[in-house]
Length: 113
Length: 112
Image (spheres, each protein chain N blue to C red):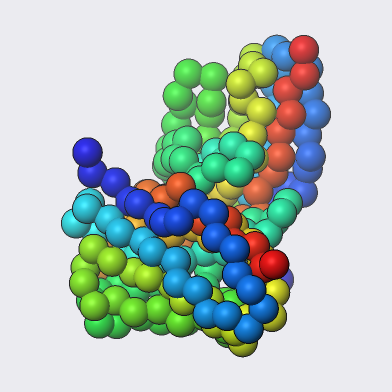
């Protein structure tokens, strides 16, 4: 079983739709969680961190459920510019400066007019 | 501006040839990572280094080698032992404590 698993996608949605991505992780010692966005042939860039209390940034909402080892990302009112691959990242802090950072395979989103 | 720089952006390798990908950061980050990404796939960890003069194998280290002689630099050598090296290679760095990762712009390696 992979350490971080995401919905395989692809997701094809019309503009204005709400779309949700899910991610599960296997290591219960994981401590920090992130969603990254990757455009085609580019490097991943941080979209948002994910906190236990949940957090929102404009149209984007991230949730973390530690008991179920589950992370989600909700995008409301999708825009054409949201088309990208979304990567779930789980980080386990081992000791001073020693991080074990694991990426999901990514979920591709295409928003259509 | 602080950042992480990879070079070259595109690299072509002949069969049986070793090539070295450069990764430099001026963010004063201790931890650096190399990932490989194949078309339509996620990132797979090749090697990582948490401190100068120390590095660890990731999930797919075979056919690759690294060095960490300076905090700022973490070059990756793709050796002739790597049978399928064509891929997009990404270098990343982080501070300690589980913070976000910063990525270079990537190197696209093609075997010709």
